[in-house]
Image 1 (cartoon, rainbow, N blue to C red):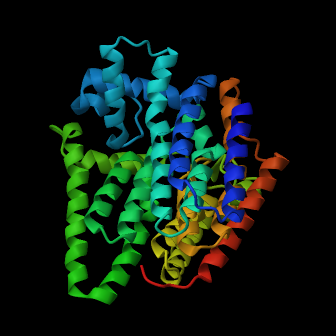
Image 2: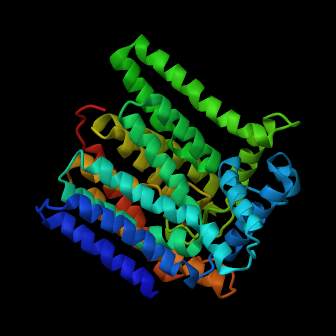
Length: 427
């Protein structure tokens, strides 16, 4: 717990610095120190907790199977696998290194190899936030935003302690959105394809591309259509080329079955995510159970439609529409859609910091701080339950969980309202 407190103190100090200071001296040096300190902090503390047992066991087994079986036989021979191929490439490298250096899968060094990609992704995302933000705001404030992310306790917990790969997924999403914002369409499409290959949750931000194309075609006509088609083809090419090693002798249909099965799994209203369903005491309830006589699946479907509509309005109302609508989609699905895990809001934190730089307003960073506290509380509880050998489910009627769920619902409503008031000044 002391390490999470340390990360929290640093992150809050950076937030206060961002809110108050006007000094711009040595900002670049500060950013380098922040990034180095964040990485060293993770390396120095990752071993405190092996991680979330189920996830670490899966990644360990998949790394070993990917290397020893080969990619073409991986999905047929590795047993239970609910991840698409994107991260399996990373685990293949882990398995290769472990085999070459004869590293025991139960060792601390192997645990380090499992967690290392996510820890690196944390630092790279923080660096990207700094690089992007300094084009919009003073460098010292960009460095503060970098620190807020690098030492965000939820970000740190997820990668260095839990051992999950949300950091890698989030890094790809952030690059894809920044490239889209900067009109580097082909690169954006390719990065999005990579994100989709890492986690199917990338589908959540797909509407952003639809909104972008509508706006793009409206302003640039036929040229925009050609660019959109070329970008889509490029993204699809990256997606299917990277599937080839896994698809020898079986075609490509298996990937769609994998996505369908993954998205259809865990049929619960919510899985420890402090959201609308957590607020009404439905954590762990079946998706076909009812609230006010209506099944959670129907509630979820209606909310998803509402989120898509709201995100469209947000896109066309904000100069940072790519990020604002992406943020509403990610946060909205987390708060209102069913089947959400406690970590699925992860990419939102980097997006909010980027929005802080674009809008020159303080509320995105403050909202991100509140969400960080609530999601950290839920994730920390689940992780503690896991490492103590208990059933990793938060009780549906635990008052603290209902309270933080209600806070998240209120903060989401406030955030969406503020973003609907935005003013568009370009892409």
